[in-house]
Length: 400
Ligand SMILES: *Cc1c(COP(=O)(O)O)cnc(C)c1O
Image 1 (cartoon, rainbow, N blue to C red):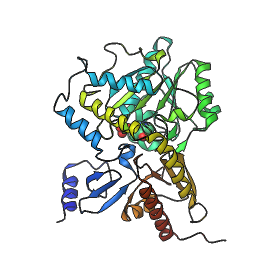
Image 2: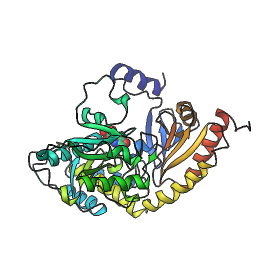
Image 3: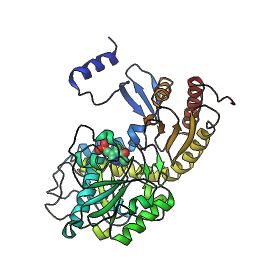
Image 4: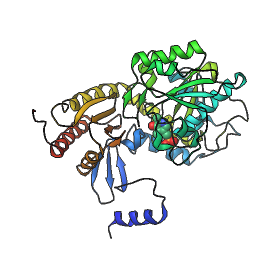
């Protein structure tokens, strides 16, 4: 029996079948990963935008190894220096407020929702306007906030207090504002929704609407944050700031950590006893995050994501019109999607077989989220593989 078969059989017996995996990965270095049969892949999923500075980055590995030998965990009944340093860093990179640390994206968004509810409580406001096709997580409240029925089906009744507007349609947001509304929650670039960037006018319009109606603007930066779009945070690609935002995925470059970052006006809403997390912001998790942030700074990965992302989108854009079924290439920075006019699953499988890992999302979109320090030759290699697979898949477009 092959190593892979052994792993698969153990999964089938002992791991709940919530995912449909194909490969067992055993090692990663930079943009490359190796499976249990020794085959190497270019990893243009990077977790799902988790290892933004690449797999096994020596600076992150060293920070984790060193901290693990000094102090791994203390409860939040005590101060820990790393948490103070990480909060200071995230505050200075964003809007000068304060942070709360947790462990995942769903928990970060749960924290945003709780913060908004507590802020609006005395006025009887609790309802959050979310977007259709958004994704905010799999806990009950974040599934309720998510604008996709497939994450809710079978789990009803869903928690109350969430309504859904059309993304990139300001009128549809304004139409949902009522007496109970407390906040608007959105992604600057919808990830699971198919790599859809917010329009400039829409995003800025939501900020204005929130100002006018006295609502909080909340951004889910779990996927588009930490340099992915060419800015530290997706909202920085627009001229405005939210009142609070969530982080997770790439924050610890693979070490689990999430955060809620709140602007000065709402940064003291949570008082002792109002919110907590056992593992939130441990010395070890914060050491990983501090190291990952340092790498982004030292390797100049914000400008690299912006420049290389534009080149990559441009190169993939050459396939629009050339190959049948390729409708559009879109994204921001190194968050890139190829939009097809049919399900993306089969193409993603072909790409994987050819040694390029990508993600199918929103059914018809192939999503690319490579590490931000992906090398030039690796981007070129990926473009070649995509071109070859498209040619093999349905061939070149024929004039009709
Ligand atoms: C992945 C994701 C989440 C959920 O994060 P988890 O860590 O899986 O809970 C929430 N929001 C967005 C935008 C995401 O991409």
